[in-house]
Amino acid sequence: MRTARLALDPAFTVGPVPRRLFGSFVEHMGRCVYTGIFEPDHPTADEDGLRTDVLELTREIGPTVVRYPGGNFVSGFEWEDSVGPREERPRRIDRAWRSVETNQFGLAEFDAWARKVGTETMMAVNLGTRGLQEACDLLEYTNLDSGTKFSELRRAHGSKDPFDIKLWCLGNELDGPWQTGHKTAAEYGRLAAETGMAMRSIDPSIELVAVGSSSRSMPTFGEWESTVLDLAYHAVDYVSCHAYYEEKEGDVGNFLASAVDMDLFIEQVVATADAVRAKGKHSKKINLSFDEWNVWYQSRPHHAEGVQPWDVAPRVIEDEYSITDAVVVGTLLNSLLRHSDRVTIGAQAQLVNVIGLLRSEPGGDAWKQTIAHPFEQVRRLASGDVLQVVTQSDKYESSNFGGVDVVDASATWDEETLTLFLANRDLSEPASVDVALRGFGVDRVSSAKVLAATEGQDRHTTNATGDHQQVGLRPLEDVSVTDGTATVVLPPLSWAVVQLRKG
Ligand code: AHR
Image (cartoon, rainbow, N blue to C red; front, side):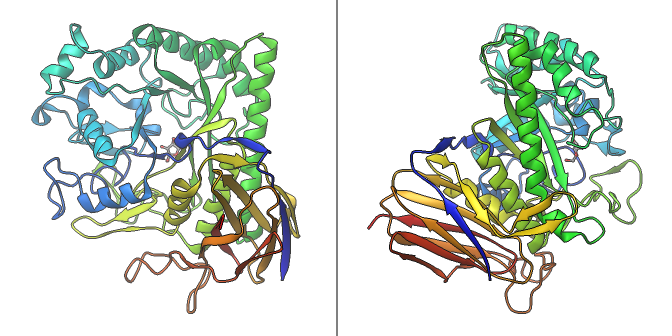
């Protein structure tokens, strides 16, 4: 049995749970849009061609904000192609994923989808092949009421009310050589500052995200953030982080420690942003938008067998997620919560089919992948304030990070309910976690659920086959409160949520 002890106190908080932390991402990539959220011929399609089976699952998961329309796709996107009468919209090549974009789903369709889901839109502008003017035109189209060229165009297209989008990404991953219109930090910093200021002059209520590093392992990491913020600090509110993790060469210990990398990534970007703040004598703080994160098996082929260049909606990076992946995603959510004083926006990438929380088959069914479960639970149950958690845990040796805690944790407290999000990274042993409840006044377990392998399953089990529900949550039995201490016994390789209440 592995052991851990958590120290918490209601007075020691990180800050209120930022609701925008639990976002996701819809990119015009592979089958995320077409046969993902939109499939007019599907038996469940509604009057807008939206798949209501996917819509229902999306509502259950409940992403609080959804980034759109890319991703690498946005760096070649001409937004004017995606508005107006559908029959007049052009088919265009998407260089990023070497597919054909039919533009049958565009801005108005996304706005309708987001309203049906009940989520906020986070819109990205193309700063790869385009620039300030086109970004301003798009903002005028989406946010101005009437009486100008692009607001009247929107009205002529049938959308009387503005889409009123508050959150805008100034481009995507422009630090990456793979990105159409890849730039140096100085080139991008100037462009972000100029575009941001111009967009704010149209709608001062918007919030702007500058492109940060595409991963902590980028050669320009650190220098990129520093240079971009030197030039654009005054014009933006957030800097982005992107991170994808996978099990490489069977090193599961390293993979399970992915959240250690995420912790470092966040802390290093915060330090860089704060250094620029001091140097530039700025009063505002720049927060972080972790607007692409997930498990992604990048070392596997991106395209499914048989996919040809310039296919429409090809099968691209349709990773099928296991129990191990769900535990890692649970720890990544813990990392975001632990840093939620500075990471105030998050967007898991992506919502459906493309490294998706959900999967759907053309003309067929739709289901939650294993990773959707920790995402949904944290989105539903994290409430009130995030607590500072001091974890004293048994450790294991990992090749990249040295000693890593076997038990990973985060917690929230809303004056009624103490919620613990816990992961056991040990593959073969259970972990017993003690939590002293002093100061909370809670004395009973109100709910306890766990995701772990059941009989006949192993850590590789996915929801790809069978009834698509083999991996999910089940009651966690081994939880007790004695003399003011809660004891939770986590099965080997598991993720759990435990709620404790008064009386
Ligand atoms: O989410 C998949 C891709 O990952 C996005 O298009 C890109 O921004 C990132 O590299």
